[in-house]
Image (cartoon, rainbow, N blue to C red; front, side, top):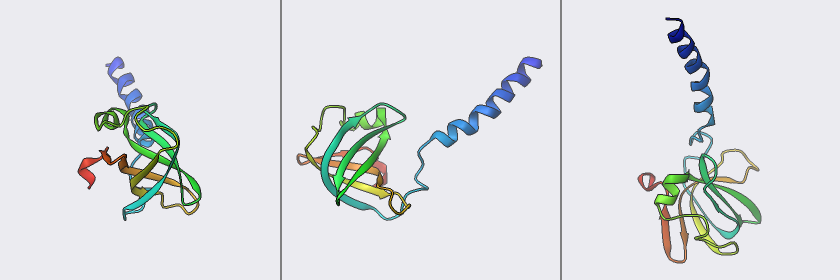
Length: 121
């Protein structure tokens, strides 16, 4: 019984931490936005979500993609799109003014679409 109580207590502490670490859509605008820009930092599959950075509209934007496995499964892997390439990203800007971040559903480069969230079209 003592072991059960310790496990339950550990789960109660860990569960909220893992939920808060997830990158939900709540902080992003509901309307979809399209940005075209130049890749500043190539796709990285490190971390809970794949990322990249592009320069668009005179700013460097942090582009948050799907979780790494899902992004790679869509064909968007590290090294596929080179730094300096022009890409178009479709997704949802951060709601905060002055925060240049987009949760991205798809990336278009070289006439190929990488739909990292195909169910959100």
